[in-house]
Image (tube, rainbow, N blue to C red; front, side, top):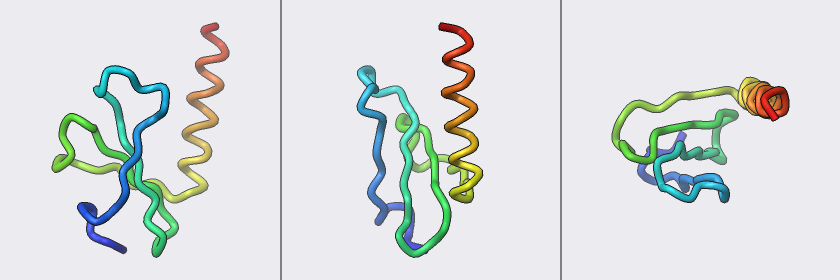
Length: 67
C-alpha cells in the first residue's frame, strides 16, 4: 500500500468548517483509510471496503431516524 502522505485525502463536499474527517482509497489495497483533518499525522482508521460501506449505511440510517 502507498505511504499515507502519498495518498489523495478527501473531505466531504458538505464540510464547511474544515473540522472533519478525511478519507483515502489506495488503489493498491482493498481498504478505505480515515483520519481527522485537524491531525493529519495522527492515527488512521482502516476499514475494508465492505465494512466502510456498512459504516456509511449506518450513518445514513441514523441521520434519517433523527430527521
